[in-house]
Length: 182
Image (tube, rainbow, N blue to C red; front, side):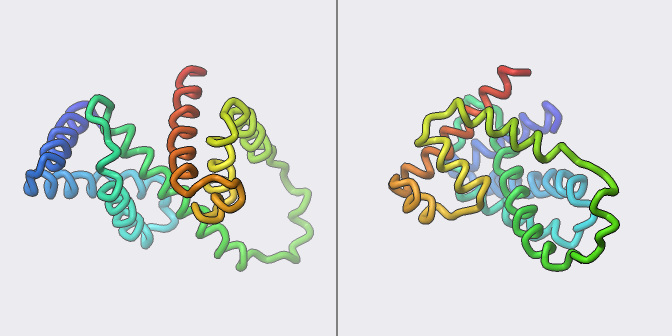
């Protein structure tokens, strides 16, 4: 998103948060266009799902609007929401699509090696080691294993609100750590 788009969307969003319904409506319309472009690039083979995912992200933005801090870039906040919805989409479709994968094509087994997922898991594991358990465990269970807030709370012994706070603070700490590594 360009600096001009960031400034324009941020002004509309902040006016919307202050009660200007027209500004909020304009913000949602503009964001919809940006989200379509963002998603079409990332799921070109699933264009039928783009509109549903756009609506999910818009709803998530609306429901989380109270968490936005006006001293931070709007783009980063929006991107975090869009990216997590996209990851949820990939996880849910991977589960459904795995039922349609043929299992009897034994000749493909040794055709090519791909160490990237193992390396990614290792890298994520190393990053998560820096977090305290109250942040690391909710992220592992909810974001990596796909458990619900309730399931994670039961498993970790934390309250549901502590799980949500742990995920939020942990992801924020990871983002800061990654920015520091670059």
